[in-house]
Image (cartoon, rainbow, N blue to C red; front, side, top):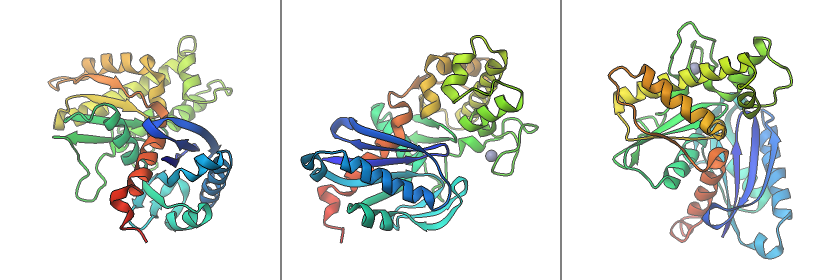
Length: 306
Ligand SMILES: [Zn+2]
């Protein structure tokens, strides 16, 4: 069984054909276009990915999973509100199901990515799973269950204020974690302080930290914001470990080592749990979306579908 998976991010839309054991068989990516255009891009990428498969493989594609930002109504397949995409109450699942001829499941991007990271890490009973990308979000697992909150909106790590005098955030506050540690925010900060205009992404920024003091400063500020955010969550919930996924986590040791140090320096009385990297990196959203698609079309749920 194969799944067609999409991860709609603030910077790019990733699409993939995912097979057994989370193996990615084909992958594509386009720059994110806001508004209804993003749905057209998903549809076109889906058609192209399907066209690239052999007839046998094509017949094995069971469904489509889409990890979508903002407020998502999974049951209705609707994007209730996606600020960065400029979408309100927009049908996502139905038009794409018709276009691609496959059942479509839409899920909140952080929830999908975090679930994949958590499962990949062995489903630890107590953990904070952080998804670091254009946005910064986290899901806390307590006694083996994700804490979703009464409204389902728990986990907005990116909007914890860590520097009240810091840069304005899209949410209306100042100095949220995301304004320092979000991928786009880091690149904008670097550019606004006169950084090299040739920097293409966070990986490039991190590579430059060895010889570019400005890049090192921006990266260090991101590390500090993450450390303070994790310590705030840690003070309340004392998770057994912190697991990092998402595109920014692909920085690897350049993220992990200074983050561990910074947390120890700033911990006060808060216990600092072990921090480790997910092996899924920037593919966590895709893998999570694929798993949801397969779960939604599995034997248990198939009878419930029209
Ligand atoms: Zn904010």
